[in-house]
Image (cartoon, rainbow over all chains, first blue to last red; front, side):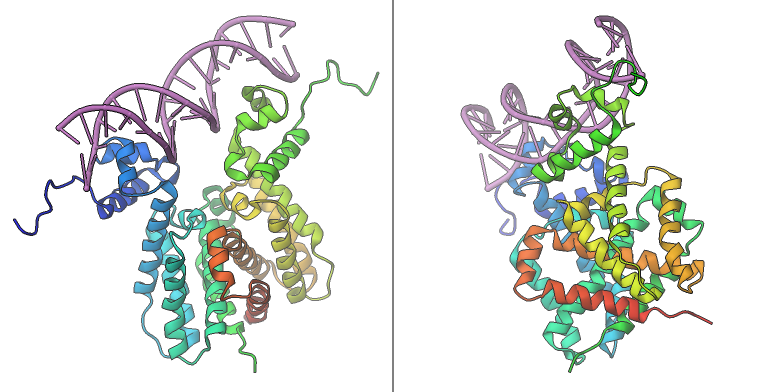
Amino acid sequence: MLMTRRSDPNLDREQLIAAAFGQLEEEGLERLSMRRLAGRLGVQAPALYWYVADKAELLGLMAREIYAAAYAGAPPVTDWRAWLEAFGRALRDAFRARRDGARLCAIAKPSSARDVSDHARRIAAPLVVLGLDQTHALSFQASVISFVLGWATFEANGPMHDYLAEMLDFEASFDAGLAALVRGFEVAG
Amino acid sequence: MLMTRRSDPNLDREQLIAAAFGQLEEEGLERLSMRRLAGRLGVQAPALYWYVADKAELLGLMAREIYAAAYAGAPPVTDWRAWLEAFGRALRDAFRARRDGARLCAIAKPSSARDVSDHARRIAAPLVVLGLDQTHALSFQASVISFVLGWATFEANGPMHDYLAEMLDFEASFDAGLAALVRGFEVAG
DNA sequence: ACCTGAACACCGTTCAAGT
DNA sequence: ACCTGAACACCGTTCAAGT
């Protein structure tokens, strides 16, 4: 057929990433190895290197997907403070939606410069439309992402979570912290 | 001699941690292995398990030392907002003072419940003295640490840092974010 | 173009045995 | 009490060779 590539490979990049998320969900980050992943795909480990330069690239692609979910999950709003808060909440949800999501994003390196600038533009855009200049938009974005990543990291730390849960309300404190951060931003000038 | 333990072991826990920081500084987190660490101490890898239950415990002890440096580095101040901001700055410095400090603290699990409650008490104390109740103190602490850990994580991410450095002033934005967070905290009631 | 087999240089951890 | 030697069950990655 015209639409079929000659000699149908078993794999493609999408399947590889999907399988990686499957492995992550079932066994966690420390058991997400190239060898196990290959096993789950019915293939030998070196085969994966046809689709991905190395494990770091794979993790980078996975992180990309988590951030994409956060952007998709942030509802449209009418002012930039509300947008930042909604995005922060969506990002936390995106981290929690996948096992070890925060830890994954903490160690993942961006796969390319284009990745980072896309990222930057993607959040700058709505903020600029809502009246913020580029510089403040980027700076506030960086703070919100940092806060949420750090929070999700602690929250996903089993022992720490359990010890703190007795004295700390994670939901209320996250909301309070995010709200404080966004409320505190000041636009100079 | 009276002060000498019979049959002087070559090692102790302090030396182990010190050597681990040495290895971290020289080769980075991914080359901090039990085997290399043992090599640096002139000993076989299994010997380390006399002093530490496993690698996770070692990392936990290292993280403990980094947080301790932050507490030591925060100058005494007269109101709780100033204290939180000073602590946030000191924590960032503590993360940056050691190679991969933020990543280390992101993956380290607290070595014990006592560790976490000490931690909590240590920061709650000055805040409570400065007029904050326990609940708010803990909540604000968690937010500040989260923000700083997240920030330091991105900052230490080589590619991300380089790509962002062109569009973002890391110093100014960190200061602005931390200030915003602390300014935004509200005490209900 | 896509995948295997075999290899290289590693890991963390256990455990019997030595001193 | 403290440490070694040998082993177990793994890693990521390269690369010649197969199809």
